[in-house]
Length: 426
Image (cartoon, rainbow, N blue to C red; front, side):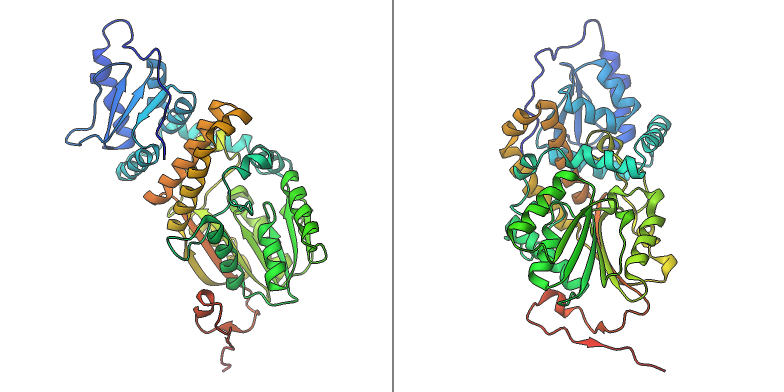
């Protein structure tokens, strides 16, 4: 994974004697990030690193205004400055970010008041109302299918893959993920499935093609829906899959199963009650469902830089917060699996393909856009490696859903018969 390749033609020591800056101001960076193994340099200065820590990376800061941004709001300041070429990192960017995240996890100091205030203002600006959600999704997903084709798999699956072996290709792992989801839902031919947030349609088509179910899939990204409909037409699956350009909150009808893969992150915590109501409206007390989402081990502020540059309106919940969606309706949580290392590996594949296409990305947009997305992908890998991000799959069912499998064996061996058991009655 390539490091920053931007040089500073004007990377010189600022006029005047700024040795006091290195002695007094540069060390303040480590109050926010902890004792990260990084040497921080302003201009062409000698730089500083934490006491008794051998630096593995060097972070060059071009000028005093950039340093001020880092001290006031470290995460957003770094993201903007790196994207704009005002910060350069010597060494592997992903490894650098992983080391910083691990160090920050040990630091006791949380986000400063300025960062917390701006985060709340961002929440207000990017609220996931019916209109706001459409705008937020447009910013991220309507960048053009050609852009995503450069670095996603051939099915355009933009969610965590499942690697049955370390040597599996990205394409194999995404197919394995879709099978993993379908087997967890115990789909049977002739059943009906509601999918909230269907991306480019790969999972809906996979369920219909390989498991004999009928699917209604909702999405508010026009480009994705048009692409999904075209694929359904080409595969002669229009009679079994309906792609609907609408908000998940307008989902109606009665279904055997509900599935959401990679959508909960876009809902916003304030709308979790509506998510639960939609699920209960569609599968009632007899259905079953699966939520697949990026999460956290504990509640916390989600990256404001990512919300600003990449994912407007995003929120990453703790597992407890996500389960509160199901609690009001008495749903049974049947299985919780954390695929954190699988998402790190998925992102490694994405970043590798992205970097091989970096010139094309820059030509499509510009150099800043390419650097922002490279930082987003590298930072996400670091987040999953360091454990600041998790990937949860939660399987649940209604209190009247009936027979359940006795073991998990059928999830991992397609050849096994799905023998169900019925709870004993008293």
